[in-house]
Image (tube, rainbow over all chains, first blue to last red; front, top):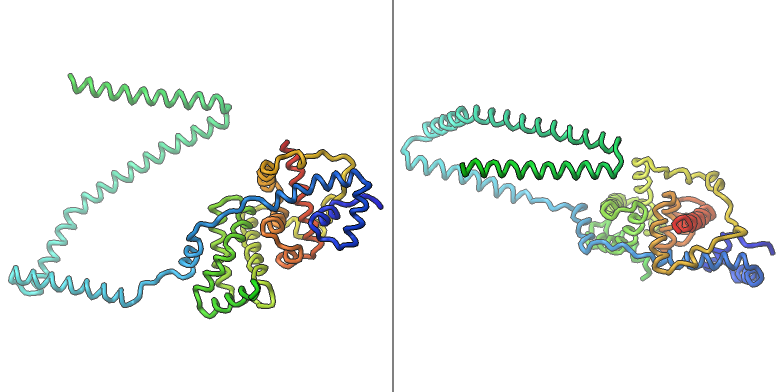
Length: 192
Length: 189
């Protein structure tokens, strides 16, 4: 009998062959060292492959999936209750204001409207200025980080990893000294 | 009641709106599915996300399940298609082995005249660790069948049904996967 194929060896180890086929293979293995060695090499491979550690799912995995399939919906009655509560509160507030000020409903609403409008008119320039300052700050910060990223990218492209480590270490030391220096200067200034 | 009958009953109850029945399906298959997807994609968080997605897809297509087929086979078919979509998006060559002629292009599986004893020399626990590493370095379609055979313990016939390929092609892929893993172990030593 000619030598076995890898396929026959695997099927023999897995006991996927018929009894007669297995007997023929066993007969060959008894006389052929090359095929026996190939079989001995592959048997532990299959045993180890079948006992690889298993990944465990988190204990609440099934509940997580169920929550995605059936998301909890707030019933309509809850929304209606909230709306009634809101409407009731507004009515009560208006009624209390009416009792305190003694003004009728339309005068009360007009007064409230005027006060709100004045508040918006006074605060809007402040908000615009705050927004401008914030956007300028964000843009400057963005540009600063872009420069840093570009610098790091060109550094990694040009310089070897060892030199990169040295440059980064020097930079960190310089920054630390600068912070320390500024702090000391402030302290001296405070003493003076 | 056999596992197959139990699955069919759970599916029928889920279709009728029994949430508890589908939760039982998830509990039964979460670990085999996570292990297949996890070993195939290699990242735990991604695998957990994908496993969730597969269960959601399964639930939404429960009505198209035909009870004459095994439920686990149908579930893994959905998972396999999901993984193929992922490979396609990541531009991983997932299809090079999907053609019969490409399978035939693979080198013949014959015992070489001289072979270094690699596996025999390794301790069992070390061998398992190395196999895990080597598994990540073999082509995705071979990795898939290797995981099905050794971790999910599917028969060659079940794998052929999932992939819609002849049993011989699947066997050939499994043997190729093992031989490639052995080759990677050889490279590691």
